[in-house]
Image (cartoon, rainbow, N blue to C red):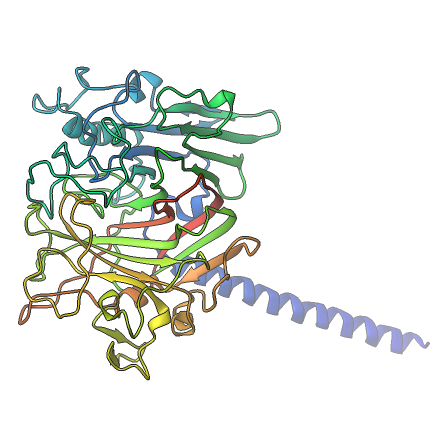
Length: 490
């Protein structure tokens, strides 16, 4: 090969590499600009911050406490820390986590001192003040682990009916083994530690069976656990969840929630604290990585995403009046064993109409076109006065106020929003990172409103992932991991 040709090849090689470098640089700039343009609604985008903020709350059937478990304090706790020079600097002490009725803390009101329901509410605000991050104009507090017991003792009058007091009554509709069935769980906590290999790890766990020793095994007892871990300086926090039911506690719920940092979160009628420093409406997506290890059996209503809000039937925002406020939920169930109760012969379990992505209405009596298999169950608020028959009304006891629920199932019609289109997608053995147009879908779902009233402003104050094992007839176990949680404003 001649020297002239060698010289030309060298020149060509340099130009090709410069061209490729330029293209690569432009791609990197485009990707960087795209990332910069994302407006994120959570304080810890993607769960990537080394300094973790996570809290714990446990509830009885109607989102109250009623009474504390012996020796456990109020069922609120937190694990919050910053990292400096490879040292974890904890913000919450174990004495803080064990605070219970009769023990004072900064800001506690006199009314709450001996009232377990009010005490838990104010303890959450106190823990939030210890954990709060104010690095910008929108302070935030923590991811919330929510645990809930589905037992209801109707002889106690602890749970109102659509916000109204009801005297004791007898029914077999709800599980309860007898006196004490609505108890709070035991609570154990390993504060996050930095291990020798650079992994940070901590956990919450416990059982509703107050006389059980979980170290002796989990046979015939209930159990919950959330373990979180992350490599220092890289990756996302990975939250590992486990929930086990038992004969005494057949209906249990465990979620990881991003709640409002102030105001009401979905299902509550008082101030809460959380991770959503910007409350999304119809213009948001949820990005999350989910790996379901064990499904929890055929009664496990596993929610890929569950979103909650609150507005009155006349479209006005909720104000804490439990007689007129209504909690609204939209839930995508991905357990393929869950049946679609909505059907041409079960119209009362369907919303009155379905809205397509291009905003066309298909009424539920249009049997040729209504997507029955896309809906598991719809129930209307029990305090609504102009319901369209046939109708199912929601359980009137499991929230402090009336509620409305739209439960969805994987179906091709949800594909445009990034949701699963077939049963089994995202389930055991099919881990995925999802980018869901949750706001776009929620804006087209039917929710009840009184006739001739201005449309409600749908502002979503809670976004969560987890399972509700719904009255299992045998011990069931669900296990899953969750990471990379983001709420992206579009």
